[in-house]
Length: 223
Image 1 (tube, rainbow, N blue to C red):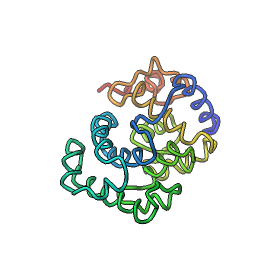
Image 2 (image 1 turned 30 degrees about the horizontal axis):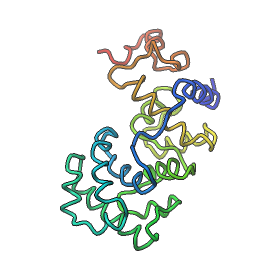
Image 3 (image 1 turned 90 degrees about the vertical axis):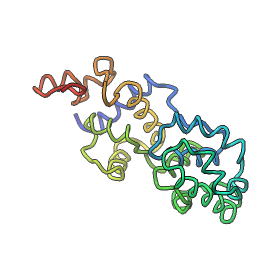
């Protein structure tokens, strides 16, 4: 099966399985999503969602966050991985929004990437989910793992994976396919205990337990 044909099947089946797939970082505006996404680097969405309600209440605008003492920001996010570095990024990012972007979150990859703590992945998250602008495909650990397991790519570099996926999926679903693959990785294709027998993609997945057994290889999740 050609990758382009497999990609179409992957999208259609996951869309039916997870019709409510969405960004699981809680937010109510672009600024909150930007902050939450910066915090989510090497940290779970669950942990970020525990921290952000109080953070957003205390610092609801770029100006208030940018003017806050660094120590206070650190205290507010101290349960987040690498909280000291992230506190510096949040403060610098907020000040840039105030001074360079009129307190607004910019709407381009280049402008967003100029902010502290923001790379291409974060920019894609913000643009796709806050503004419905599909500039790329977010490749997190789940997307990286599931696309490799499904045989959609053999790349390990997130940038190269994104480039390949952008050729396989139409532009209008780039944000959505990220959510669908993340839902798959969190709910079905779980790294240490994949539920291959229940997966809607098991017949086209070369890494499914049945496929691996047929090839004489040990199924994932076993020794």
